[in-house]
Amino acid sequence: MNYGKLAKSVLLPVVGGSPVGIFATRNSKEIYDKLKKPAFAPPSCTFSVAWTSLYTIMGIAKYRIASKEKESKSAELLYETQLGLNFLWSFLFFKWGLHGTAFIEMAALLTLITVTAFEFYKIDRTSGLAMIPYIAWVTLLFRLNFSIFRNY
Image (cartoon, rainbow, N blue to C red; front, top):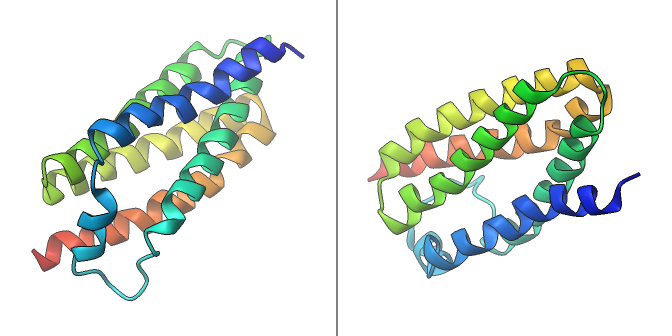
């Protein structure tokens, strides 16, 4: 096991999300709390725990893929692209208040996450399955984003 490579794989999404939190989602708790949300909307306090956990799991899955002898460059590119879209969403929704654009972007994100999970699964079953909680969480947020967009 290459602990340096593992740390890099986990820290990229976890630490990469920090500048997003600073620049894109400043006051996001206040913004989120003021939005007209459906009954299924999670409380704002759940987001940091959920994202830190998911980013850690995603990073481990990415490490496992990168460690395989089988060609994984396309799967790694899919992963990096979906991570970029993940970070972009916060700017669209919170920083710029573009709820409709954020919803469309999230549809693309959810599609890309699913394709990434499938590609991971073909290379390493555990890595593909590890992406399922991420898919489930983003599916919930997709519904939430749509509901908020519809209410404004």
